Length: 317
Ligand code: CUA
Image (cartoon, rainbow, N blue to C red; front, side):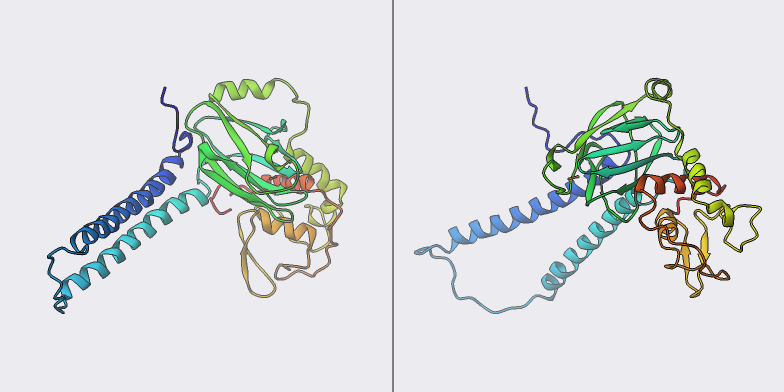
């Protein structure tokens, strides 16, 4: 039968908004293409050689006509802009509700995911339906891109940087995950699937299979001790170092007077290169951890620092 979908299935809360913008643009393009083509055909026929059409070409101007074709498209353009911006914001702003936080590390050529309870997966991601899922992503080699057409989300996954994305699946099923950035020989097979399950099935799934791993938060706490972070940042420390409780999501004032939001990217940079942004009132005494901590360990440390914050989920990431 008729099976030639023009757009992928809509399986997330954002999908219909993205499609609305898409169809709006397609619709406008069709309308104007038809108008122009109809004009071309009409005048071609009317003024073809030998017809008795009026060719005296009288000069006249019409202010009304000029204004109509200037102001009309201007308003249309603005409408498209605001509509698309609204969709963009709902796509890029983290939801204010509590999210299920998944860590994603991309490498040539696979996706490594970790659930908040420690469960790991490769190239597959099981998530519950109707729950906002937040992806905290980084790459350990080159640029990749996390692309799930059915959810209408695509976000680059970069080495040396943490990017975030979110989605909320609206119906159970299995959806394709693609890498959408050419990343080498096996780029085309660097994919997998997102398996959306009923919440109770997800809970059951979490308890089956490979569940022995420690949670990212616990791993982070272990690393926090083993890298010696606790010596300065711990509660009993005598060294003057910024306290990390409630730092995630807060506004931090730097020595330069600048204010920055302590998001994942800020934490990552401050761990690897503490000299980049010195917090006001503190001395630059922290050692650099560049090349000592893997991307995965970084995400775990960040998960631990996040867990020290009670203001998480303020949507400021
Ligand atoms: Cu990873 Cu293309």
